[in-house]
Image 1: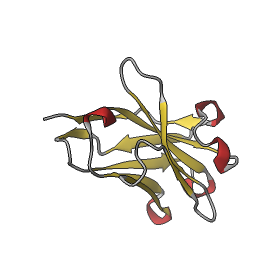
Image 2: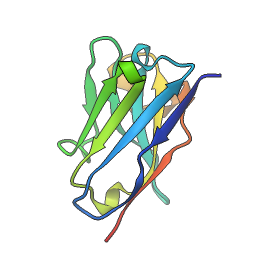
Image 3: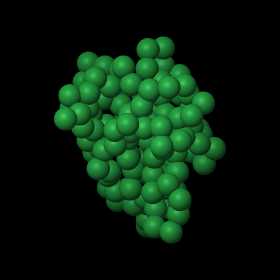
Image 4: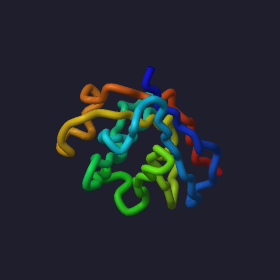
Length: 125
């Protein structure tokens, strides 16, 4: 059964940094488009960033552009989300997900076939 597992969440002060990891099990991630989403209480699920397979192209939500960086490590079958200058509004459960298809639909959660269980990120002083 293909699975995704996120890790790296935690409690951090505003302005701090975290690196989230998404590792595939029975799923070779560099063949898949990978997206990161976040979900905070009382808010809609939000697409944060995504990266294509093969020739990597990336996309970021306006709210995280310039602060977050998505990357791949095929040797570790992993995708990372480096988050810098974190703000309280970045708080939420972060999920990685896998799909196939064009970059243009990478923030459409219904396009994803596999999801991880999520990792909590809390930005607070």
